[in-house]
Length: 417
Ligand code: EPZ
Image (cartoon, rainbow, N blue to C red):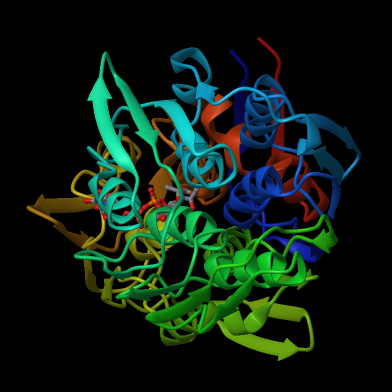
């Protein structure tokens, strides 16, 4: 397995371009199953999760290709309704093919995505939504089996805000007969981006990006060309690295309005942030101020930025309280940060972070996607060398992150296994 070696102490300076959003690309690629023709998507990030999704779509009978950052998916030949365990286990977002398969083929057999490091991550709300739309759901031998005569519009209230649950049910409802109303729907930009693509395909969705989404079912969708929105979490990760190293970094091709909570908190932590169009300039000031955060559904502070922000707080002046309200086990990175000298005390879903002068480099292990990014950030501000192992987690969701940091002057390299 590859590892990443970071020599701490460098200020990040310069300009870097952010990639397309993984969490927008995954549902949008799945939406291609709803069309019987060739969709073209641009600004698709080159990631393991994208490869896994294309592998799954091909298994279902779609013709897929990726050249650079452009992907083509043609589901005219969709002929298989089964998403097998060995494909789904690689990436739990594979569950996003469930809604489109039921809508298009009237049946689906999808392996249940197990839990993952950050939590149990059940899909009960996805399944409840499909039942309310008229699908019969059976669980057997680790698979979800869904079948229906014809999906019919329904009123669906999500007990919890679920991003992929909202996306899955929205994709199922676009071909249902009648009107579907989703309440307590997720408002993440990736949900709105999916709805925008579906509407361009001929769907009729109103209110995406708000807690209430109304979907008028249509007969069929037609293929389109669409660009993937910028990755707000990668942008936030790069911004945090600039603040952390007291650097001066300009990030291009961003969507600043997707980052209001992150910009607000980084400014409170002392960073100077200037937004101009799709560019965000971050100048890190000394000292870093301690700031409390609580992760919340969008537009609150994103859970996917929690680990990265914790690194910033671990070398801030003062004490901060970090509360994780979305996932029940998303402090796995804490033990590795403690090995690097961070002073963090976890009680339930809160972490009390007392800033220290500096962290010290160490061999550490990544356990999930955002934890791996956090450990690289910690290496950037540690004395001597940090070795981050199991970086396959990183490659699932960040396109060439070490190359982007090298471009900004970091002493970082990937060592091939
Ligand atoms: C999406 O996951 C993202 N993944 C996650 O990003 C992100 O952390 C998460 O939303 C929250 O913003 C993709 O978009 C591919 P949820 P998702 O359903 O949809 C509970 C990353 O690092 N829940 O919004 O799986 C669930 O257990 C990843 O890029 C149920 O109980 O998250 C969690 O506690 C990590 N039943 C909460 O809701 C359900 O049926 C929010 O989960 C569904 C969810």
